[in-house]
Each structure stands twice: as structure tokens, then as C-alpha cells.
Length: 244
Image (cartoon, rainbow, N blue to C red):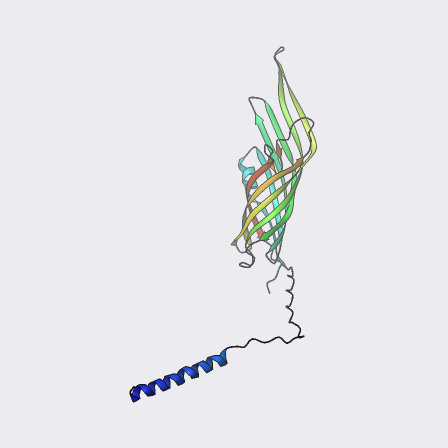
């Protein structure tokens, strides 16, 4: 082996050996837990403090449109929610509806008229990503108090005459459960549009004396014990909470 390669070999050995020593010094050594030494306890997570984040009030838009263009359904609905940490929402809806069904051929008219209230809560899946908007899932309990009236004409084929009759059922009630998926999108400052999908389950209704219940204010048609509705709520966020 030439003298040049011999010197190169010696330098290489020193470099490898020196580098190994440096790496060994840099590697952290695990701390040995001495017998009898107590383990460090993890600090318990602090409970989430609920802070009022928003108060919104508004109205349901489809009720206003239907009332303006239809002769069969009239009504309006007021909505409100109180938010905490933009994560939890307490929700209340108040409304009134009147249904009118008529048939000129069979000469009858049915009316159902009354008030309703829904109350429940929402959970916002986007609370970490936004300070005021929402994609939420919720639960509602609804109850309605209403009256119904049925007017019909009975003809006497023998005498060739007809007689109009009216029967009424008053102080009726019904209740239902709703599963709700809702968005809250800020259109302008403090103005929110909330499209929401409602799956309703009829829980119970009053027995009637004269006519079966056809429509329940707040619930709708009773042909099925389940219904799906879409609503569009316009909400105004009250400027009562100051940002820090």
C-alpha cells in the first residue's frame, strides 16, 4: 500500500471514530425511574366554560311567500336562537298556520287553524373553524294547539233540496319530534340565512268528534306519521355581545 493511501486510511478512521463519539453524546439517555419515586400525574383537562356568543332573531321566509301567493295556506313563523361558544344553540320557534281545503264539486270546505311552538338545541360542527357561521345538527320538540271546521252540503234527492252543515272540533292538540340539519351563512353584517332540513315524526294527536284531522299547524298534512320539510330562515344577530 502506498504511503498516500496509508495516510488517507488513518485520517478516515479518525473521522469515523470522532463522528461516532459526537453522535453518542447527542443521543438523549432515558431517565431511569428510581424505585419509590412517584410518577408525575397528568393535569386534568379544564372543563369548557360556556360563554354567550350570539343572540339571533328572525322569521321563516317560505311562510311569508306562501301567505302572499296561496289561498290554501296562511301563516308566519318567528325564530330565535342563543349561541354558546358558537358550538351549542338553544332554539325556539313560534308560529301560526291556517289550512284551507275545498272542493266545489263535492261542495265541502275544511279549515284547520292554530298556533305551535318548537324548542330544542343544535350542535355546530364548524365551531373551531368559524366564529359565527354554522353547520349544525339538532333536535326539536313541537306542540300545536288548534281548531278545525268542516262545512259540507247534503242534498235530498227525493225533495230536490240541499242543506249546508258545519261541524267543529275545538281545543285539539298534537305533538311531534324533529331531527334538523341546518346551515347559518352570513350574507351581510349580522344578517344570516339559515336553510334547514327537518325530518318530523308525529308523536300524538287528539281524538276528534266529527272529522279526522287533516292538517296540523306546525306539522302539516297527517297522511303520514313522518314528514320532510325544507325551511329558509332569515336571522338578525343582535349586536349585544362585544368582541374582546
